[in-house]
Amino acid sequence: MMTFTAYAKHRGISQPYVSQLVAKGVIPVSPGKKIDPEVADAAIERSRDVNKAHTADRHAADRAAKRGVVEDRPEVDESVCGQFNRAKAQTEKFRAKMFEINYRKAAGELCEVTAVKRAIFDTAASVRKMLERVPDRMSARIAAAYNVDARPCHLLLQGEVRDMCAELEKTAIALPENLTATRQ
Image (cartoon, rainbow, N blue to C red; front, side, top):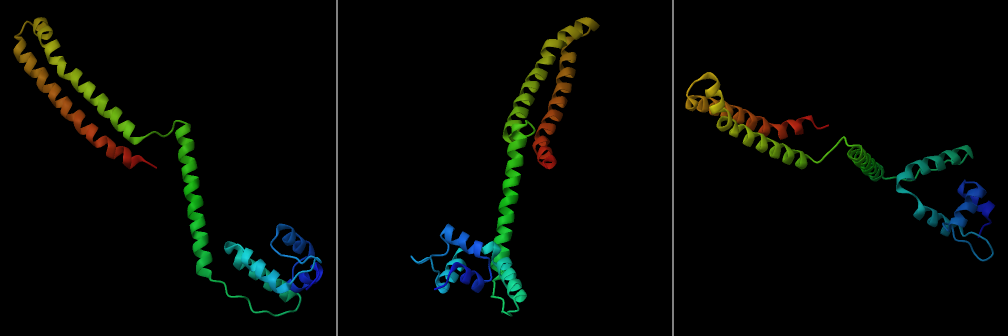
């Protein structure tokens, strides 16, 4: 059994840090406020953050070297630390992207693609219906204004409206693909 100061010296850490670990419940103490070094060492190892394991070991070795004690560095599985760090970075990157998307939605810069497609379809259908009524409404007026037969005027207008509707349909069909291509 050791005092806090003796354990700090044994471990190569400061006495206030030992007190902090005891207060956090990481290091158990006896009723006489003594520390069992084997139990405390094991407790500290169990509480270590996998992400910081390599750094903590490097610092411990540096402290030991300053004291003139040459110790072998404990083996740290670099692949586990690397995998953990990569996974953590990916999670943070995902969170940042989601935050940006939600912010841009709230700011009115983004909207649902399906809603845009539906609005385009509805608008195109409405425009087509209006255009298809033009020959019926205008052929008699044009014929009267130019003193010609209404039937050829109707057929001419109908052909032009059909061509316009075909072009409108091509544009409407290509629009979702164009919207997808411009997404950032």
